[in-house]
Image (cartoon, rainbow, N blue to C red; front, side, top):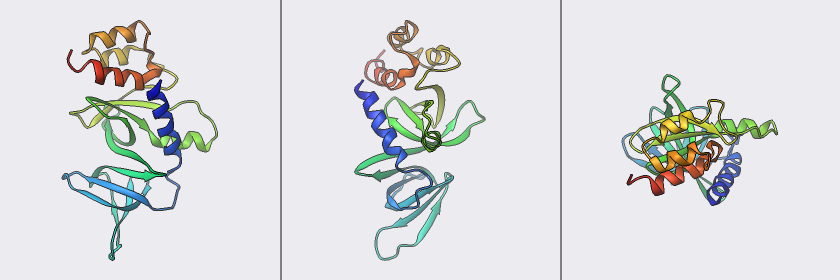
Length: 191
């Protein structure tokens, strides 16, 4: 339940930085070569406009070819964005919000969230998971479940028998993906 509250706060904060927001925000950019830059920036469609701190505040544009992610500071909260390849869609590159980091990380589709809030509907948001050693993610469910049933989630977490049993018995539902990921990271690493 605590994790659901954290994710909800993250989602509400994420809405505040809609891609249509023209203001520059404090940002930390992570480059593919391992270097990091601090400055201010704004998010565009597959593009980050970045200004460094100091006298020379030249605007530089970065694409996913240059960076693997960035952290944005919004109302004293750091929101971690990461570019990941979607494993089931011909390795399509998507921008996701990192909600939980661990051996298995949980990501939420930020673009989908903005569309939902702009239309004043809340039909759900997408959960993606990715393993620590891999840059691709797998779509598993929404906060309202999955049209594919529990089989993809069971397959993904089959390396952890105790979690597998909780999902199969519906003790943990696929709509409770934050709890599933937290459970995996805290209890299943040694199994």
